[in-house]
Amino acid sequence: MSNDVIAQLRSYLDFAAGASTEETVAMAPSTRPRLRWYQRGPVLAAFVALLVLAVGVPALLLGSNGEPPPLGSQLLDPLDVGVERVWPDSGFVGSPDEIASEFAREALGWVDVETISDPDASPDGPVWTTIRHAGSEDLDVLSIPIGEDRRVLMQVGSLVVTAGMETEESGQLVGIPQVPDAVSAILHIRFVEPDRVEVLQVDQSDLEQGRVAVSSDSSIGGVVIVYLDANGVGLTATGGHFGPFEASTPSSTTPQETSTTSTTTAATTVQPTGDDLALVDAFLEFAKNASAETFSNLPLADSVSIGLGPEIVRSVDGENLQESQAWMIDKAEFRAYTGPFSALDLLRTLDDYTVQVGEHPHCVGPPQSPPNGLDDHRRVSVQPTDESIDSCLAWTTVDFFVNRSGQVEAITMDLWEP
Image (tube, rainbow, N blue to C red):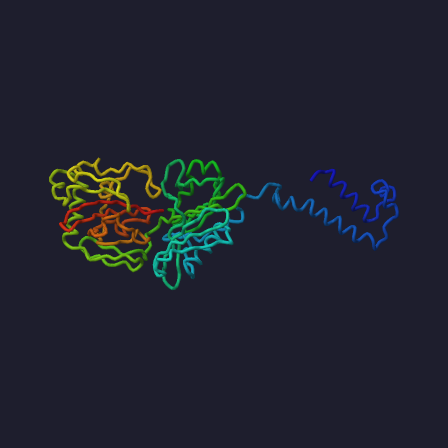
């Protein structure tokens, strides 16, 4: 407010309080008679109120120091980010819809939301829920039960969050996927030792770089990123956990043990036979020690389809798979990861693994359908054991589709869909 306006207001207040006649006349000629004492009160109150509105409201809008409040300042309370789960670490008593609504309220400030949970998902297992909010894109979250009617979020959004990479110059780096229209973000980071949750504000330059440096004195357990628009309103969120793999996720077996049906999904698995285990062993041996001899042990059909998830990309001559290039799928992007992709490369990375037959969980998610035309084939899959990975971000699977003659007619690979 300008000094002239404030001075004028003060003059009116002097007049209301009984200023000198000369001042009164100069200021308000139409009110020459002095106000009686019982007339001054209402006028004084009115001008005080006007002064408060004129001076106080801008101060509230700008903040006590005369500067605009920080974007998203109403969302700076630390979230209960977990190590083995995204949110809340202590668990939430309620249904998949209720935990989704509560996360939207606490993390994004969304109040009037609509939640739509997967109608085909078992309420006793993992459930995907879509959160809808006026003016925002739909946000998908994955919740799982952890006992005592409690649920936790294991996945927030569809963007890949990375964390923990350490450099000498910057410390640990958290990767921040870019979101259109986002001008800032709020990071809620759970550090493991010492155990604490820190809240960091990220500006537009950090968003453009796609990463931000954080403390390096403790490993990162989990991250929730809340994106804000130019008005400090929550646009969307993403989150992941990087601590020990959640104990309630599907059980696994070693090649010497039998596979069992997961208690947290609707997957239908059967016990792998000796032939199933031998098939997986043969492919793993070839992947790690490629030679004409190890290749000859692969039970390949004359034509083999190569695919990503439920999609067959192409078919190749089985004999050509002796060359690693024949396994390569030159696709720019798949499940938010950048290509190219190769099932053979995934097999090379497996040391501790589990073998399953039939449908299998997609990490903590529901089973994925086989590619079209392969429903009647025996599905033998190999994934890393729960103990060998830190989170679903490290989960992979290679699935072999075997015909009735025992030959592999299709090989697909899949990754966790963040």
